[in-house]
Length: 111
Image (cartoon, rainbow, N blue to C red; front, side):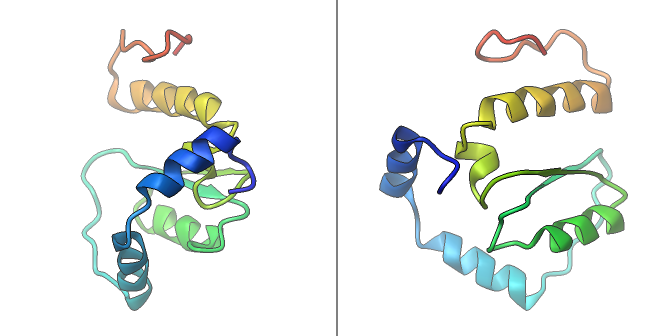
């Protein structure tokens, strides 16, 4: 996790689960998924070696979803140094997508 700070990396490694590998194996084998009936945001990391950005882009296109490509590793959007800023961006997207006003960022940052 080159884009995560030491604390975030340690936290992730302590809680990493074997089922993550099983999920990736099943995803690579192919799983039929119905198109969601709600707005969808697909986020892909440029440096993701587990789920290539092109795969995420294809899913977003199939689902007519919003696609956002960000720098970082596979877990960068969740654990990387830029995760708080991306979380705020996702909250803004969600507010716009579902028309919900007044949801506050859990850390008090502007939405």
